[in-house]
Image (cartoon, rainbow, N blue to C red):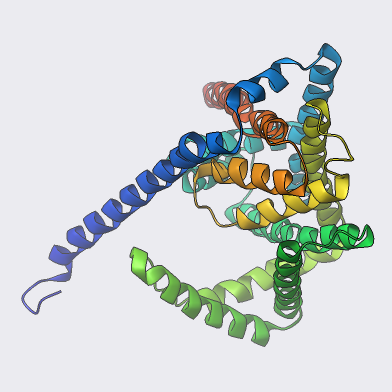
Length: 355
């Protein structure tokens, strides 16, 4: 800002520049997704053979896939129920499906999904503090499992004598990050002074990282961590084991759907064993913790197909399995989310009229 320019005059320019960067970022992410799906994935396998593998599924195999996909849709709701005492399965399902559908399809969907989640839980009578705490804890436990799965997968693969250097490196990084994350969580919960220090340090780090995209600074993270600590202590004492169990169940149910998809299209355990499939699943889940594209579209399909092919699966079969898996975990949630949105809006209108 020049000496002759007032803050009020400078603000529109900064806001416009920030919006332009966000638009460019969203457009770039969609370009990357399309390039991976259309330009790179077809080079991995013959899509006529991929389609033949998909259309060869029997009625029993389709029924099994649908049953596993329904179970998978339910399991993440258990995590939110563990983080929000008193939350019913029906309400958790409504919120989860709508926010996921928005996050997977709308540009900057994650931010929009957070707003919708807040609005829906508020309509159910939860306070902003309760919603924020549940979102933070479910997110933290989700990260813990993402970091821990490569370690567990490596142990299983190594036990079979098939340790892979790439997986080994990923597991070592995951182990170090997991230990650091768990240690930070314990310190934040146990000590207010340490919570303030960790919050201040993370605030400075986030400010530096966000500066190139026009965000920040974040000077109040120390106070936020202190407030987070005071709200977290009681809930974690009572429900940390439920958070852990439901988070593990959610991720393993997702993996089970991938494994069933592999077996359904003909990828046998001799070609890709369950531990090897878990290793590929864990590796890609860890990589996609960074939101390169909306819902990881393109990145998941290519990364998982390549990892399973390297493990020994036929390229066309593993691509077919991954596309089935993604259809049931990504595409299926869009129409379900739309139906849930309509039902929720009708309920809100009826409640407004009756009041």
